[in-house]
Length: 386
Ligand SMILES: Cc1ncc(COP(=O)(O)O)c(C=O)c1O
Image (cartoon, rainbow, N blue to C red):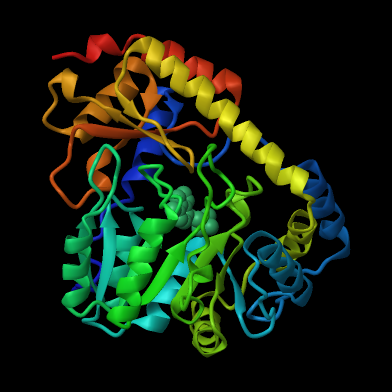
């Protein structure tokens, strides 16, 4: 038999999904894969039930149902102030995952360089491989996860065509300040690079942090390709609804790439999700209050246990520092943690380019009882000491 693709030969099983399987194997409370264990808003699931009987059930327009894009454009304008043309500046995708892939395929040629902050959401590495781009990693330095502007400029100097900006960030929970974003914008302009943003946690923020939409910075609208999603905002990670927002010339290309990647997002789910896109402000205020409650519950439990951790400014992940346990290998630590303590976590090394193996990632998008069960188990973590 001929050999399979060299391009994808180095792909490993996603570490996050592997840890979910390990959690199931040991009956562990799974804090690895970042999805909520609570239900989406009832208005949306009720509407989905209606749509199941009345449709639509056939292909929608490849770049997304008209009413969905119109509702989305209104929501974007409401929160960011950007007036977006739903016909020429939006493409609905199968989650932000497809949005990022379509953005990369639309912007880069094989061999082009793309700046990625490290730690990074693991898909970005795979996206660069699939599109043939070469990543240049720029460290976000723990514990504050700031970047060194000199190092960033050096990356642009190497001829980077684009930068991927995850804000709020998974896994480190960083919310970039306006000043930091202005530094990135300055360099993007100076070196004529695109900025591909991943803003799936735009509504999951902890006071006093606020989200700055990168595309709203002076001069950035035409060079920003926004990848975003309904997954986290409406607790519908399984509906696979995301989108790309960019200038018409870029969207024109994204539409074509998207058409060949997936044809389109699921028509009945788009129809049901319009309900969510039209929610009033109170929905988003309650969402923030709910996440703040979960964060506070989890973080105060970790403090009681005495585990060192980074407190997130946004998104719903915590990096725990496991230095004291004497493990050289964070993956082995996570396997042992699932088996002996009964909590599923993700080894931090899967997010860092640098040699970092003293951090593990857990998430807290969970019901109170799940978080309490996890904290009860983590209270026993002392037995992991070598
Ligand atoms: C930073 C980030 N981007 C994208 C995704 C995937 O989003 P979607 O469900 O829209 O594909 C996730 C999911 O965890 C994420 O954390």
